[in-house]
Picture 1 (cartoon, chains in turn cyan, brown):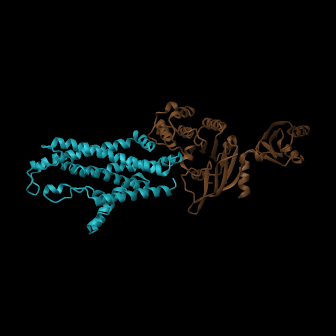
Picture 2 (picture 1 turned 90 degrees about the vertical axis):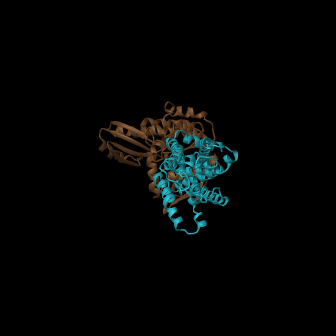
Length: 266
Length: 298
């Protein structure tokens, strides 16, 4: 196991696309998160009130406990950047024939999958920790009256974010392995995520069936929080049932990856 | 003698194409085993199956009597077709990854880089290497684990004559250490120079398997030339022991029984008033042997 982790580390250590995409991921998250305040402030200056009741400047976007829900929700949109890296990682192993060489040198196909899953968990964990510390710092700065129970309330969204990212990256790994070509795999991943599935989900009338589609299921781990500032009801917790759906999908994806790699001539 | 690998009825179909067909082959320990065959005869497919990167349609194989476990492959150094490494990593990092996969330490890395003459360029990324250097890094990676068996598929592809000679020397040296080498090639000359055993594949079928020197002893081939070749040709046709005379460019090529003394022929020609300007005894080449095998069974 230790060797498998070390192998993945050696592979990413001097990989330019890894460092570029990870920096991009972090940079854009910071940019988006920090621009929220500016956006609300500009709304306030222009005298626009949300629902004619709330002054935008007084919305506790960055305060505990709301910060956890808000920051993880916003950051979840940027999981596609890490998904791009995941696709590059697997498709380049195929196009450089290094996957084949790894097997020839004495890796089993299962070992190879495990090493890629390690990479996924690493990326998701790293991103979740980054979100955690960013949220913690912003929260401490922005909350006028720090209470410990406020600080930990809603912090369950951090593990939910981790799970969400892990599941999506496993999905990206599957697509990359299936399609083999970098550009095509990325195109199809986004086509499916952004267009095909949303259209199908839109056509489906029943709510619980909507939640069974893979991307919808993954996104459902963190529901949109902002409605509550317009006094609408939102789901401000991670639902157990929705976690189970995602876990089932993860198991299914990993099984498909296993079958695909086992049957394939490299 | 033990076998390092045995195959039984190994078969691979790609749709209707039979890339490898019912291959049963034993490769003995400590041999330098050449696998010959024209392009597309199934050499690489066979090696791919032995290395677990191609799933056989049917049939089995077993390394060291231990079937297809990954631990077997950790003791095999292999190059299949083109060298495959992470282009953005240095030679050093690429070899570290291989060492991790093979479950060994980094101690040998410096040494194999020195053997293959890449030590000075060990920090350069693989993509900056020339084809010859890439080929040598592949060889370094195959040597890394001090392998029991080395599998080399066209190891001299793209190398200059000096590189080819170096690789040949290296193969002899490694074989001298009691290792088994499996060498796939369509360059017969290469196989003849280094191999002890060889097998011939054609259209996925095994045509022949045996020792390299086994079949040469019954015939002797001579290349001869004199001041008057056409008259010599007529004369030699009357010489009782000669099996065959052919004109080949400026030379005459004659085939004699293996036991024949060349001095007798030389005296006969001289006594008939010819002056010999060129006389070479040729070992019957693997190439002609190879072509015979292909023609016989075709």
